[in-house]
Image (cartoon, rainbow, N blue to C red; front, side, top):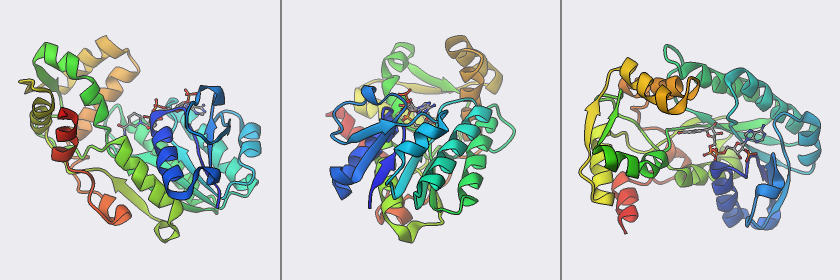
Length: 281
Ligand SMILES: NC(=O)c1ccc[n+]([C@@H]2O[C@H](COP(=O)([O-])OP(=O)(O)OC[C@H]3O[C@@H](n4cnc5c(N)ncnc54)[C@H](OP(=O)(O)O)[C@@H]3O)[C@@H](O)[C@H]2O)c1
């Protein structure tokens, strides 16, 4: 069996490649990247794989048995077409199975919902492709909150519109373990699984960050409109409302689920106590 992963120049694609190499050996793993020259130190063949270039994708997928398609970053309409290009190229190249890194989120009623719907459309395209498939729906990455620690420390607080809502965050490392299982184990074919750890509130998140970094952060709930204005001032008109929509989803309970990680891995997702304790050392 030969496996390929798209977007190995990105953080999730790289993590999946590393875990897959551990499991099946580097000679059986190939990476795709929009700019292969940017990928360093993986020790595997990396071929050209721009989601906007169907011919390039078809040529690069020759000889591949199973593919992990890492969701792109383009605006929703472009993203559906890009993913469709990958699915079609895989089919034409004779790939047998495709695994897609989808997302959890509010399907409607928030500024994030068009992004969620675009991922749902790609899920539907994969189910209709005639290939074997498995779909993971990622929880929200916890790493950005950790990377944000200096900013939180300066402000002395986490402030957003999640309120008391609980969020089943995850880590790229745990996701990479799950995607390695999904692509290598045919007993998981035909499944759509939610991949996340135990749901926590923002107040709990502040507590874990305090444990790891010796900070004294508190949590302050903001109104949805105030938070969107705050994020838009920092991140601009496209990303600001999307971030607001994610936190609206948390407040509405969209991410408050136990998920299917244990079904996929045969073990629970890493606990937040373990994750943050390890950061403290
Ligand atoms: N669950 C969450 O909290 C969360 C948060 C953010 C994003 N996401 C989703 O998860 C995905 C992976 O996350 P990540 O952490 O790996 O993001 P990342 O580190 O920013 O990587 C994004 C990857 O997408 C690739 N890409 C973008 N446009 C492409 C195209 N036209 N053709 C081929 N590759 C393209 C980039 O390639 P280049 O190196 O060429 O730019 C890069 O490898 C994201 O793309 C996004 O859909 C999820």
